[in-house]
Length: 251
Image (cartoon, rainbow, N blue to C red; front, top):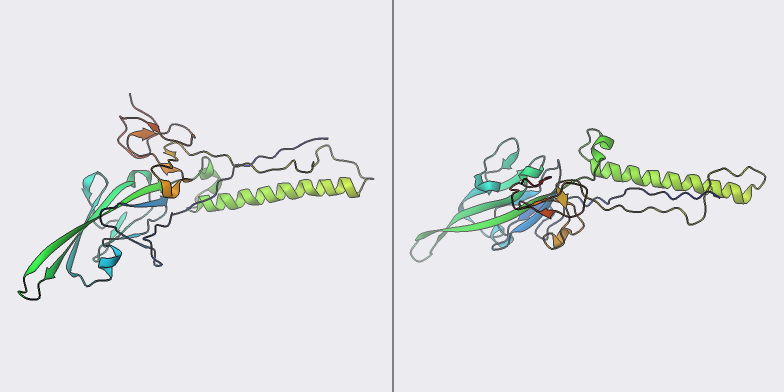
């Protein structure tokens, strides 16, 4: 009897990880003293970041102004990649590896003492750490120009698994119930078919349960000071790398 063991590369899509500070409208609020971690798919838009904490958003704010600073301490302005509204909302379009990093916003507003009508300017700083969650290796060619490559690939793999399984089960039915028919050279043996998940990350990405505890199964872009040259599941230390998503370690 011929034994076929079918192994398919299958990776469950995790998408954009939902922060506990993400509301129903897809807005992510800041948290004073604690950077908010956000994971975005490649080529997808980030959620909308709010330059306020939830309590401040539910309180009247007098004459607010907002200053957004991006990775490498660059002041951010509204452009084709970055959307910033007059009310301090920020969204990054078509997210790529180099856009990963710290996004901070300083909210300035006024308070007025009822007794003296004296005005005081108050400043609050909110930080958001944005990382990239990529596709598995080799998916780009399979998905052509689709921006939803990960989801499409997962669906196609599951369809292939089901069709392969159905084919060999029909062979088994033929063998057990139609004994007069010729047994095919390749046929199904009960319990011999299985789908095995192959765990890997594309170069420049890795998994880190310590750093990304709320997204431990995600392949996340390697941070500065780390790199990944192959499809390993972890990023390696490299002191000379200064960029996100490094695929090599310069001497």
